[in-house]
Figure 1 (cartoon, rainbow, N blue to C red):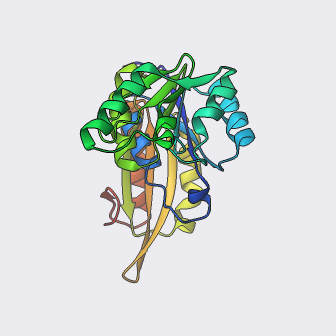
Figure 2 (tube, rainbow, N blue to C red; figure 1 turned 60 degrees about the horizontal axis):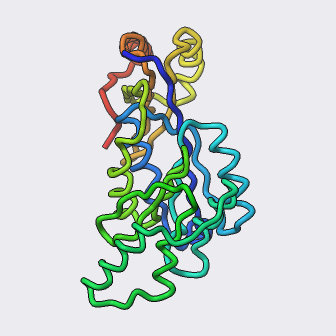
Length: 253
């Protein structure tokens, strides 16, 4: 088992997310997908469609994390400014990418649609960018060093993420165990804090639930150390039993 920690940040770009008009459906998919290959999402940000905000955010997080994944703002309209902003963050020019142009020209020829000036915007890539394939609508995403720029539409983002996965160098996979019992958070809080001190390499999270007039708490344990995770789970189970509960694996459905 490797103990190498590889980290990532997800940056969601779009006024429609911040206004509540559109519900973000990408973060959970990205986090689960990356965890499977040993990349831990340590931070997620939702930012507006403002160039200086995008530039400042990209430059901050790309220097902090191993990988950065952005979603949104690479379409054909005037407010799709992600590509231009990423180019500015890296200090490079942006222009038509020959391969992107060829892919989109063929796509619109096949579909019988005009390759308009607006659609041509989607072929503009920062100089030095490496394309990310988009088998659905063909407009590509792109990679600039450790920054991966993807579409905001969930189905398109997902195929882009799938296509770039082999470029990622993962590390230790974060493992998880969950125990649930009919115990109030207040009752388990103090002894749980003591367990957290005893298991420094295991993250212990407490999540209350209320369902059908019943209540209880789920304890989620996360660690890259499987043996230590098992020990923590045994300790949490024993604590729940000591408090008079009958713990079950997983969360209440």
